[in-house]
Amino acid sequence: MSKFIVHPIDKLEGEIVVGGAKNGVLPLMASVLLTAEPCVIHDVPDLKDVNVMIEILKVIGAKIEWEGSSLHIEVPKILKNEAPYEYVSKMRASFDVMGPLLARTGVARVPMPGGCSIGERPIDLHIKGFKALGATIEFGHGFVEARAEKLVGASVYLDFPSFGATKNIMMAATMAEGVTMIENAAKEPEIVDLANFLNQIGAKISGAGTDTIKITGVKSFGGAIHRAIPDRIEAGTYLIMAAMNKSNVLVKNVVTSHLKAVISKLIECGVQVIPEGDNVRVISDGKLKAVDITTLPHPGFPTDLQAQFMSLLTVAEGSSVIMETVFENRFMHVSEFNRMGANIKIEGHSALIQGGAKLQGTEVKATDLRAGAALVLAALVADGETSVHDIYHIDRGYNNLESKLQTLGVKIERIQD
Ligand code: EPU
Figure 1 (tube, rainbow, N blue to C red):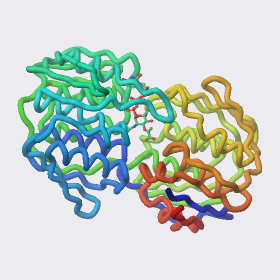
Figure 2: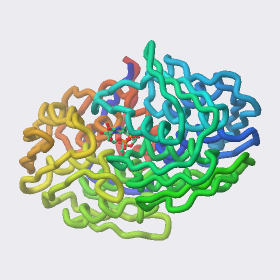
Figure 3: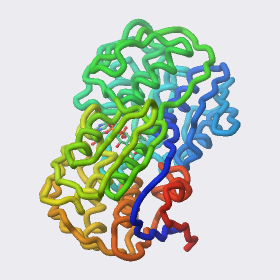
Figure 4: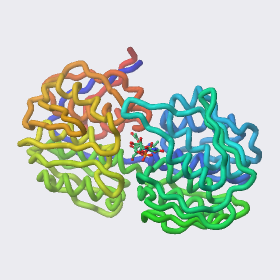
């Protein structure tokens, strides 16, 4: 187990570069299972979760090589229709292999992913989609198995615009006979990126990014070379960090249209957020006004930036309310912030934050990936040194966070416990 020792900083200055989107790259990698032809994905972040997906794909039959930050993936033959438990238990996104495996071979067997620290996280909507396409589903011995002689296009209405279900059903439907319509689909930019990649290898998908996605099945796929979109959550984390401090920071490799809800809240807080081509400059005097936040599926405020924005609101002037509507248990970080001197109360799905706290450095622990990043942000404005423990969570989604922050003058060290 490692920890970060983080020191407070007077001013953040310089440039910080955002990598490829973790939550975009994982389904892109899984979708390569659809084709026997070689594919290349550029701008892949070297993250724990990406490496877990590499191991799963290798077990299934993929040949994978890194070349710089590009991944060369080729799956000439499916050797095993199953994702091993040891990897799926580490990463829920492993479930992404279900759709493409089912489409390519008619059989997919994946361990039930189970809940995690942020919520129960059922897979009923994925299953509803596979069934609608004609698959039979069996649960047993901790596994879910989908089988289909052939998949046939269908209409699938998602009760909630689930990111995971949308990508899995979209991948499964690419080879189904006829037309599939996914209604109330997730609209995240990573869904659009996945659809673009699938179309590059030969799929026929339209409407990705709207709430109705149309997929016309095809018989086979080719290869493609594709660049992953920038990680909007990594970018948002840096924008929020810059806002919380006195700063003049250029965050590079950002698609501002992916971050409208966040940028508009930062501006409401009194921060200057200035788009400069593919980059965004943040100028802040660190004096912030409190604002209320409600997390929602895209294009609403992302749940993956809720903890980081809470960090900001603990020190903003005034009181605020954060309502978490996407996950039922994503407030584990509240007690860690309160240990640092924040004043936050949880009432049902809302966190009531009395701002203006003078945060104090202490020992805290990352309870999940985004909560971990949020604690690092809090540490930068706290009085004294903070140790953030369990940073293996942070490593799942932020590539070399400490080196990147050091480019802005932050004093942060990784200590092996
Ligand atoms: N849900 C269901 N049934 C389903 C699927 C989802 O009830 O079949 C519920 C979930 O329980 C949850 C809500 O719908 O309450 C949202 O789930 P969704 O499927 O949209 O999310 P996900 O695919 O499980 C991805 C990201 C999360 C991110 C969410 C929401 C990956 C690997 N994970 O999860 O990212 O919070 O979308 O945007 O892509 C993170 O990166 O820190 C992270 C947790």
